[in-house]
Structure formats: C-alpha cells, structure tokens
Image 1 (cartoon, rainbow, N blue to C red):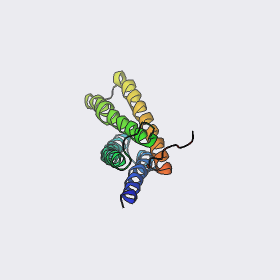
Image 2: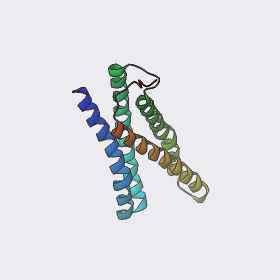
Image 3: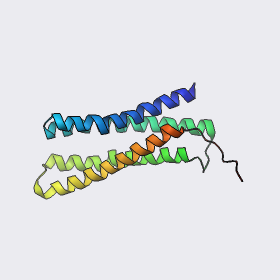
Length: 147
C-alpha cells in the first residue's frame, strides 16, 4: 500500500510541475496581459513549490523508513537535491523577485529581475528533469550486488 501511495504522490507532484510549468504558464502568457499572467503563474509556481516540499519530505521519510539510509541510494539523494532547489527558489530567489516587482520594474532593475527569473527557470527545469527520472526509476533502493 505504501508503495502505491508513494508512486501516486510522486506522479501527482511531478506531473503537476510539468503541466503548470510547460503547459499552463505558456498558455497564460499567450492569453492574458503580461502582469496578470505573471501574477497567476507566480501563485501556481508557489503552490507547486509547497506541494513539492510536502511530497519530497514525505517521500524521503518514507524511503528512509522503508530502505534505511544508504550512501548509494541515489534516488534519495536526488530527491534531497530537488528539495534544496525548491527551498532556494521559493525562499531566496522568489522573495528577491517580489521585492523588485514591489518597487516597480524600471530599466535599472529589469535586468536583475530577468537574471533572477532565468535562474529560477533553470532550477525549475532541473527539478522537472530530476522528477521525471524519479517517476521512471521509482524510489526503491536496490543494492548493487555486482562485485
């Protein structure tokens, strides 16, 4: 039962990341005024970040409980890395972007906002690919028995 729940949670999280990041957000920017689209997309990305933090934390705890803590359990370490990227994006980069938007995106700070947005996009892409790897490989630890 735990394995099925783990697969469902991982698929929900990663599937939502892909759907919002690569389908919903581009549609928003094609259909709505840029500021409105950005605000809606920002809220959706925040929601996905919190879903990722909850899911990732739960999955890590479940993996350690089920398999123990092994230095060669690459799925566990990949998932931990994903959580670190979410934390950086959500609690370091996003507040900096929000501050720039609050003071107004003028010519002087627009380049900084674009740079931060680019970093945020790269972190999201890395997490999207890492998540896809986890969906394909699963999270179960298997000791390499070849010697």
